[in-house]
Image (tube, each protein chain N blue to C red):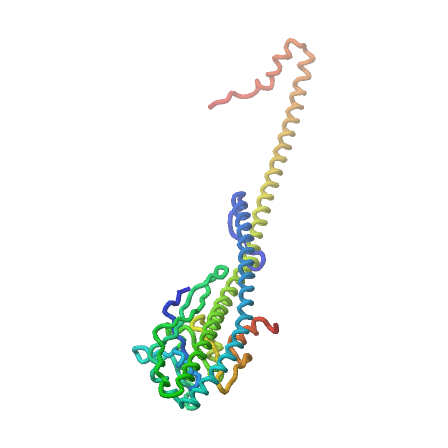
Length: 118
Length: 252
């Protein structure tokens, strides 16, 4: 397995507040080709753009973790459920208006499928 | 799949039998080793799963706190969202992946690295600077938790894959390879036994035939020998050669 030394960025797809907060902490990055590692999603953002950005992030070699607000993850749920790569990891995070719901989390769903009712 | 009668196509010799027996031993050892590996990995897997569960709940809580602190910032400084988004040029918080060896599997683990100086140091100098700093710290702590969670999750995905592969190999050995070798051993043994029986039978038959021939010749000799004994002992020795005198000379 490759050592993934070049993977060191954290990407965000979220609503305005979540993205701003995380950017404030310092994970925002814009490279020389004007590609950024974050996407603000509001009511007007088309689903296609979200899917396209998500796809783009998963194919980039410098992103290690993708943070997605849970309510946005719901919108692209089929894509996330089909996602089985080890890198980059996809983490679903809650937002201000949508508290964290473990029942909807893709990874937790896989776990419960593996272990049945335990 | 040819069912349970599959065997290797080799010529049944004793050497082949020894080879097959060694292979069987090898398969048994390999099977038990792989099984143990699978069990160790599964134990590690369950461990990670419970950790992920805990970490996710922790993450939910800490991000909630971070959201509140951001709301405070908005209250005191106004909306600086646009400003922050525009000035995000180089990431200060990055992650570094390192490899951990877990029962033979290289699992990645992420570490947070702070690269470069604190951007946004000058943000909010006008007003609300303290709130902004607090918010920044809270979010950085949240990101720490998120990075740990990401490590656990990648480990989970990779382990899942490896466990599936190992279990597939265990089952393959148990249900395909070992029966095949077993059948081959039985086949060779039965062939060798049959050969032995044939040999034995042949030997017995030849012995039987030899005995018969000796019996017949004994009869002939007795028949010839009896009249000689009646004529006298002096010529008895000569008549030992009587039967051979009729033999033609051997020509090479």
